[in-house]
Amino acid sequence: MRRISADYIFPIHAKPIKNGVLTITDDGKIVELSAFSENDEDIEFYAGIICPGFVNAHCHLELSHLKNTIPAHTGITGFIKEIPKRRNIADRSQQTDAAKFYDNFMYLQGIVAVGDISNSDLTFDLKKQSKIFYHTFVEAFSCNENETDKIMQENQDIVDLGKKLGISISPTLHAPYSMCDRLFSEMKLRAEKYGILSYHNQESQDENEYFENNSGKFLKFYSEFVRPNKPLPTGKSPIHRILDDIDKNTKILLVHNTFTTENDYDFAVSASKNISWTLCPKSNLYIENHLPPIEMFSRKNAKIAIGTDSLSSNTNLSMIDELRTVSDNFKNIELNELLTWATLNGAQALDIEKKIGTFETGKMPGTVLIDNVDMQKMMLTKKSTSRIL
Ligand SMILES: [Zn+2]
Image 1: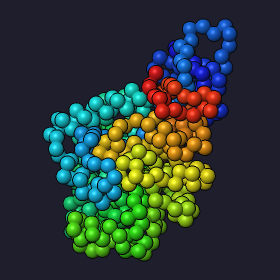
Image 2: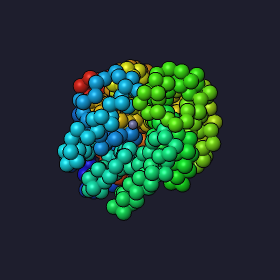
Image 3: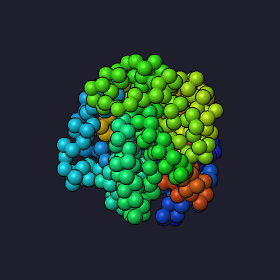
Image 4: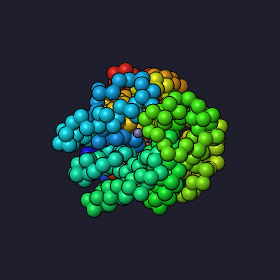
């Protein structure tokens, strides 16, 4: 049994407790959360705050070898052109080594669960052995109707491989701009059967421009790079493509939402009550140099989750860096709210909130120490770091 205390404990399901004491079993199950008393002995005391383990709700671990290879601020169409060019700059064992390194790095930083997008089986063996729980979304995209059968089969084969290994896995759709109608509707049905999907939404203003007005950079991108054999449907905000006839019970991680408007938000919550607004602030700054309308989401009590995205568009896979980026830019968002996004909301997005996300008795959420917090203002500082205890 371990008894752990700090300046503050943030249990997430309840208000922060000054000098709270967390009693956990040696394998990490929460036994009790109590107030500090003078007679308490054998307590590990830490300077800083303690919260449950982080959930990184959006990552592409298999792209970890692309760190520092793609220039910042290319915009999304520039960025997508770079990925296939660079994906194979390292051989498979180098790619696996990079993924392993960052799996361990994420764990040491306090990440206990990850919603991870995969296009191959590269990371499956390491996920089976990892201390982190991964739910893997096997992604499909193609704008060419003639490729649909082939892409569907490849997607199925990778999902089957993961199932055979016993990892948590399901099929998913990439984005509104990257899928022809046939692949889009067939993959949507396939994902809905699993009851969960992750989807890149409104990552750029160009995406809105194309779908709403059939104009902007995507026209050039399609004519020069992707060449769909049928134009993608236009006339509405791109968020409609996934939500217009969505299965109401399917959990949806809408990822990025960098250019989502209040109208889009209002439409989305009328279409589904199961949306997690998964924000990746550092990746958005890296690619588009723009942040999502975080104040709007917060004001509307949106279920916000946080992701790091991949090292092709981020300098690190660190949840505390993402939270600091939010609090640097939106100073009125309270620490308890930020930490709720990074823990419980991520757990709910991945349907694992019965096991992790809060310090409720019986859960095994992991314990994270955050140091160098400004205790007066109760805010993260530039020096705040996190680690698993
Ligand atoms: Zn992504």
